[in-house]
Amino acid sequence: MTRQVIKLGSSSIASRDGLALDVIAGLVSQIAAAHRDGHEIILVTSGAARLGRRLLAFEGPTAGAAPALRSLIDSVRSSLRATGADDDYYRLAAALQETLRRYEAPPSAADSLGTALPAAVGQPALMALYRQLAAAVGIEICQVLISRSDLSSARAMADLGQLLREAVGRGVLPVVNGNDATDPVSALDNDQVAVAIAVAAEASRLLFLTDVRAAYRDSSLRERIARLTPAQARAVRVTASGTGRGGMGSKLGAAARAACCGVECIIGSATEPGVVGRSLNPRARIGTVVPAAGPQLEPAGRWIGGMAYSQGSLYVNMEAEVSLRTGSTLFLSGVKRVDGEFLAGSVVELLDVRHPERLLGRGSVALPASILRLLRALSPQQVACVISVLLRLRYARPDAPGGLVDPATYPDCKELAAGDSRASQEAYAQLAGLSADRSAELADALLLAQPQLCTTFLLDGGFLHGQVPAQAAARRVLRDIHAVHRESLVVYPA
Image (spheres, helix red, strand yellow):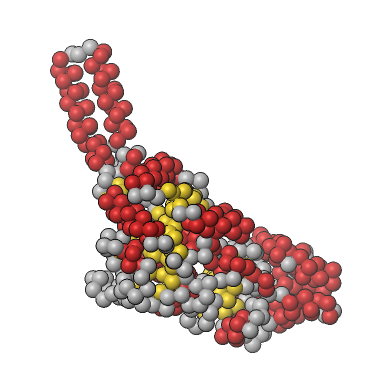
């Protein structure tokens, strides 16, 4: 028995009339056959917003009604003027004009409409469609809508995993979709949702169904890629295409992370005959396969490692990777680059700075991105100097002699500016270029993220004169400062 998640993308089920009903019906029939063979299936589907736009007449046959209606109204008006018609005819023309407003939309109308309303209209219609198709082949379904707030809650995802396992255990087909009706700004990527669902449900396999048969090395789709490691999958460069938010790049990135979490991934075509059954056969040659890179994650690491939405990336050096693999934490000296804007507590990916395609793990950051950019790659002594300067910029009088970042006046600035590392000199340059508002913002962010550390500096008072605290307690706090919370680290297999 295999528990498999199937992610069905918009590009797989798109048609001129909105949705390709024959493709959806065929896949539901294949899922029913897999159920009869003892397999457990979870379906992650896109298409609600697309179907909603179709129902709102922005796509499909009625989208072309505006020119014909406009011509009809012009003809009616000409006749009215020629015959001197009465008020009833003018009311008829007004009614036709109102109808035209309903169907007449500029080319960008579907975009300006956004996602929330089409998704709200399309979700019940999409579920009604799946329910009818599933009932015809003897399957009961349940609907699961997932939002960014769900992915941000370890408890919510644990509860969701339990629900999914119970549903498939009873022979029910869960149909999952990102909840664009209530969470349209987050623009959830259903490829990433599929990974979260696979990890939460403890699935062993994840099948991405798209509008091409596999990932290809060339734009002419002739050189199929049969097998990839997670690092190779992340290194493949493709252009996003199709009608969905993602594309092949999104699927390869999602497949790489799923493989790191112990879930084998397959990328194939939704229209390939028997694709569901073939994907459940380990010996079948189908699509592009990204094998699991190790065992499934332990329960304690599933949310951080596989479910939470990543807010950014930290690039680390080889020494930091070795330290992480021996069970240590990630110190600031090992962080060489910071991507993204995130707050303290956000989940980020850990990448090899030399080979960014290598996904090393994930964790919850102890500092916001703005502070990590200041402190990255610094020694504990240099970190102390940066904190000293930042607090002085925040709390000292701005009219101090020589300014607040003068190396000739303040030892902490001198140590940073004359430092033997590029990171130290860059940190000093950033501090010297800060506006009063920006320095206050950064100091307050640091105080919120590291209150004990900042309190030590504030009570000591030496920062006003460029002196960092020398007490043993202060040095101990500085040594213990890290980029990622120790207990949150999830390191993937090498």
